[in-house]
Length: 360
Ligand code: ADP
Ligand code: MG
Image 1 (cartoon, rainbow, N blue to C red):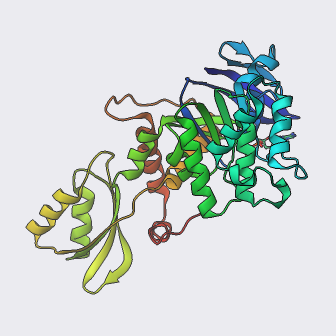
Image 2 (image 1 turned 90 degrees about the horizontal axis):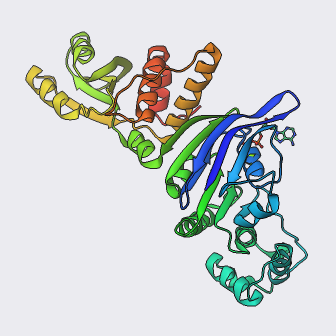
Image 3 (image 1 turned 180 degrees about the vertical axis):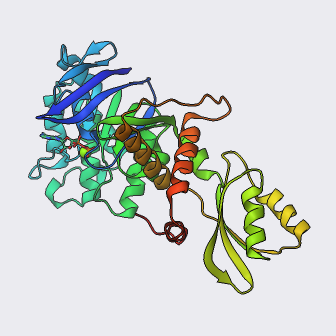
């Protein structure tokens, strides 16, 4: 449906988009995830024909967006970061204006009313846009994108500036639209893509650093790999056992105690749930386990890890060589490798800080 091939966009000497290629199939709901300045909006603006590329091509249904912009624009509904609303118009007037602008030939009133039902703005149809809440304005922006029944809908940071209730409503709406549209959603919020998208493309500094099914990322997130353990027993021996235990890739003693128990941080291999075998080993040694806290790995950790890793790789100017391992997804390997690199460097205090929920 959408094929992006070696896309480059420069502003002066700055590469906003630096050789980006990916393909989006009909019906996919794809999240475009990256920090501010990563190049998300630039890519979206090029797909929608608002910006030209420096080099590379974007094709929608086989049609080049630069060669035939009118044809491709008909297929795409776009909600830019700043919704293009005319605040002095009523919702009805504004959507009517959009309808004319797009040159639609439906039953106008029926078409617009249907859209208002979908995005739940029927109750404010006659109201002036500037008097609406931010959540409602965002819905009007989405309604504008739906005028003309485009097959593809592109949302650029659709929940930015909304309150938590409005965020949930807009995410639900995006999920509903995803059932019968091809959707691209850009965001810097990791939970947002996890909540809405089948697939996640992570972009950083104009380059794609990961392109994975959401379930693979969720699996990596859900895996129990890092734990804080509280164990009663001689610290040196306990630590030596943890370090030697198969399935554990990292162990260290933390400078905290809980009664007569020492605290340790461990990390297991990807795909290994160490808890049961650890329990039996400790029981055998007669070292009671009095606390086990999963440090988890949320999307933010994964994101930081991947981006850090990508930056390091770029810094070294080496081409990335992935070790083949059919049992693990690319992202799991990536995260595992990066975590190993990182663990070796991470200081006790940072890990302790992270375990308390602190973030960079
Ligand atoms: P994102 O949407 O991921 O936050 P953008 O695509 O807006 O990122 O920006 C990517 C990079 O391109 C940033 O460094 C930004 O400063 C730069 N950039 C974007 N638009 C322009 C522009 N019109 N002129 C100059 N630089 C721009
Ligand atoms: Mg942006």
